Image (cartoon, rainbow, N blue to C red):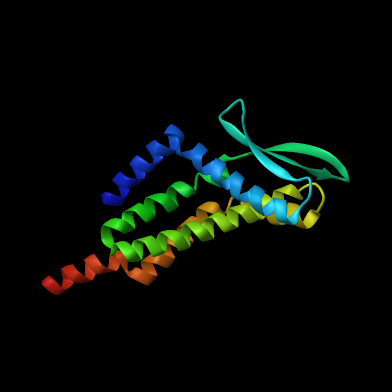
Length: 168
Protein backbone atom coordinates (compact mmCIF):
# COMPACT_ATOMS: atom_id res chain seq x y z
CA UNK A 1 0.00 0.00 0.00
CA UNK A 2 2.90 2.32 0.76
CA UNK A 3 4.33 2.15 -2.75
CA UNK A 4 0.88 2.79 -4.25
CA UNK A 5 0.42 5.85 -2.04
CA UNK A 6 3.87 7.16 -2.93
CA UNK A 7 3.17 6.57 -6.63
CA UNK A 8 -0.07 8.54 -6.44
CA UNK A 9 1.70 11.44 -4.71
CA UNK A 10 4.57 11.42 -7.20
CA UNK A 11 2.16 11.32 -10.14
CA UNK A 12 0.20 14.24 -8.67
CA UNK A 13 3.47 16.16 -8.30
CA UNK A 14 4.43 15.16 -11.83
CA UNK A 15 1.21 16.60 -13.20
CA UNK A 16 1.67 19.75 -11.07
CA UNK A 17 5.03 20.71 -12.52
CA UNK A 18 7.61 18.10 -11.54
CA UNK A 19 7.64 16.90 -15.17
CA UNK A 20 8.81 20.33 -16.38
CA UNK A 21 11.52 20.48 -13.73
CA UNK A 22 12.82 17.07 -14.79
CA UNK A 23 12.53 17.99 -18.50
CA UNK A 24 14.59 21.15 -17.93
CA UNK A 25 17.26 19.21 -16.04
CA UNK A 26 17.38 16.59 -18.82
CA UNK A 27 17.68 19.31 -21.48
CA UNK A 28 20.40 21.08 -19.49
CA UNK A 29 22.39 17.89 -19.00
CA UNK A 30 21.97 16.96 -22.67
CA UNK A 31 23.12 20.40 -23.80
CA UNK A 32 26.26 20.16 -21.67
CA UNK A 33 27.11 16.85 -23.36
CA UNK A 34 26.17 18.17 -26.81
CA UNK A 35 28.35 21.26 -26.38
CA UNK A 36 31.35 18.95 -25.98
CA UNK A 37 30.61 16.45 -28.77
CA UNK A 38 28.64 18.36 -31.43
CA UNK A 39 28.87 21.83 -32.88
CA UNK A 40 25.81 23.96 -33.61
CA UNK A 41 23.53 21.50 -31.84
CA UNK A 42 21.32 22.03 -28.82
CA UNK A 43 17.91 21.09 -27.48
CA UNK A 44 15.26 23.38 -26.01
CA UNK A 45 12.07 22.74 -24.09
CA UNK A 46 9.13 24.65 -25.53
CA UNK A 47 5.40 24.98 -24.99
CA UNK A 48 3.34 23.00 -27.50
CA UNK A 49 -0.38 22.75 -28.19
CA UNK A 50 -0.65 19.89 -25.69
CA UNK A 51 1.87 20.52 -22.93
CA UNK A 52 5.56 20.72 -23.81
CA UNK A 53 7.95 19.30 -26.38
CA UNK A 54 11.65 19.23 -27.12
CA UNK A 55 12.93 21.18 -30.09
CA UNK A 56 16.21 19.94 -31.54
CA UNK A 57 18.46 22.47 -33.30
CA UNK A 58 21.19 20.84 -35.38
CA UNK A 59 22.70 20.48 -38.81
CA UNK A 60 20.55 18.41 -41.18
CA UNK A 61 22.29 17.57 -44.42
CA UNK A 62 24.89 20.27 -43.75
CA UNK A 63 22.27 22.99 -43.20
CA UNK A 64 20.88 24.37 -39.96
CA UNK A 65 17.54 22.85 -39.11
CA UNK A 66 15.22 22.13 -36.22
CA UNK A 67 12.43 19.69 -35.46
CA UNK A 68 10.14 18.85 -32.52
CA UNK A 69 9.98 15.75 -30.34
CA UNK A 70 7.24 14.90 -27.84
CA UNK A 71 8.40 14.41 -24.26
CA UNK A 72 5.75 12.05 -22.85
CA UNK A 73 7.15 8.58 -23.57
CA UNK A 74 10.64 9.70 -22.70
CA UNK A 75 9.89 11.38 -19.36
CA UNK A 76 6.86 9.60 -17.89
CA UNK A 77 8.76 6.43 -16.89
CA UNK A 78 10.73 8.59 -14.46
CA UNK A 79 7.61 8.51 -12.27
CA UNK A 80 8.28 4.79 -11.72
CA UNK A 81 11.91 5.41 -10.79
CA UNK A 82 11.12 8.31 -8.47
CA UNK A 83 8.28 6.44 -6.73
CA UNK A 84 10.49 3.41 -6.24
CA UNK A 85 13.37 5.45 -4.88
CA UNK A 86 11.14 7.23 -2.37
CA UNK A 87 9.70 3.86 -1.31
CA UNK A 88 13.23 2.57 -0.67
CA UNK A 89 13.74 5.27 1.97
CA UNK A 90 11.00 3.58 4.01
CA UNK A 91 12.38 0.05 3.74
CA UNK A 92 16.17 0.44 3.57
CA UNK A 93 18.78 2.25 5.58
CA UNK A 94 19.10 5.88 4.54
CA UNK A 95 22.64 5.47 3.23
CA UNK A 96 21.67 2.45 1.11
CA UNK A 97 18.58 4.26 -0.21
CA UNK A 98 20.68 7.29 -1.18
CA UNK A 99 23.22 5.04 -2.95
CA UNK A 100 20.44 3.35 -4.91
CA UNK A 101 18.93 6.74 -5.73
CA UNK A 102 22.21 8.02 -7.15
CA UNK A 103 22.90 4.88 -9.16
CA UNK A 104 19.39 4.44 -10.57
CA UNK A 105 18.75 8.06 -11.45
CA UNK A 106 22.26 8.34 -12.87
CA UNK A 107 21.75 5.28 -15.09
CA UNK A 108 18.30 6.44 -16.19
CA UNK A 109 19.48 9.99 -16.92
CA UNK A 110 22.51 8.70 -18.83
CA UNK A 111 20.32 6.50 -21.05
CA UNK A 112 17.95 9.41 -21.68
CA UNK A 113 20.81 11.79 -22.53
CA UNK A 114 22.13 9.16 -24.94
CA UNK A 115 18.70 8.95 -26.56
CA UNK A 116 18.57 12.74 -26.99
CA UNK A 117 22.07 12.61 -28.46
CA UNK A 118 20.78 10.07 -31.00
CA UNK A 119 17.83 12.36 -31.70
CA UNK A 120 20.20 15.12 -32.83
CA UNK A 121 21.43 12.84 -35.62
CA UNK A 122 18.01 11.41 -36.47
CA UNK A 123 17.86 12.87 -39.97
CA UNK A 124 21.56 12.37 -40.75
CA UNK A 125 22.03 8.70 -39.87
CA UNK A 126 19.91 5.63 -40.46
CA UNK A 127 21.71 3.94 -37.55
CA UNK A 128 20.76 6.78 -35.17
CA UNK A 129 17.19 6.64 -36.46
CA UNK A 130 16.98 2.87 -35.88
CA UNK A 131 18.47 2.93 -32.37
CA UNK A 132 16.42 5.98 -31.39
CA UNK A 133 13.19 4.44 -32.65
CA UNK A 134 13.97 1.18 -30.86
CA UNK A 135 14.78 2.86 -27.54
CA UNK A 136 12.07 5.51 -27.41
CA UNK A 137 9.34 3.23 -26.10
CA UNK A 138 11.69 1.21 -23.91
CA UNK A 139 12.00 3.55 -20.93
CA UNK A 140 9.23 1.81 -19.02
CA UNK A 141 11.20 -1.40 -19.45
CA UNK A 142 14.41 0.30 -18.27
CA UNK A 143 12.56 1.58 -15.19
CA UNK A 144 11.18 -1.87 -14.33
CA UNK A 145 14.63 -3.43 -14.81
CA UNK A 146 16.07 -0.98 -12.27
CA UNK A 147 13.29 -1.85 -9.81
CA UNK A 148 13.93 -5.58 -10.29
CA UNK A 149 17.69 -5.00 -9.86
CA UNK A 150 17.10 -3.30 -6.51
CA UNK A 151 14.71 -5.98 -5.35
CA UNK A 152 17.28 -8.66 -6.19
CA UNK A 153 20.07 -6.72 -4.46
CA UNK A 154 18.17 -5.67 -1.35
CA UNK A 155 15.31 -8.22 -1.21
CA UNK A 156 12.90 -5.40 -0.46
CA UNK A 157 9.80 -7.54 -0.81
CA UNK A 158 11.50 -10.79 0.22
CA UNK A 159 12.36 -9.49 3.71
CA UNK A 160 8.78 -9.09 4.84
CA UNK A 161 7.71 -12.46 3.39
CA UNK A 162 10.61 -14.35 4.99
CA UNK A 163 10.19 -12.48 8.25
CA UNK A 164 6.51 -13.48 8.46
CA UNK A 165 7.32 -17.12 7.67
CA UNK A 166 9.92 -17.29 10.43
CA UNK A 167 7.38 -15.97 12.97
CA UNK A 168 4.84 -18.72 12.20
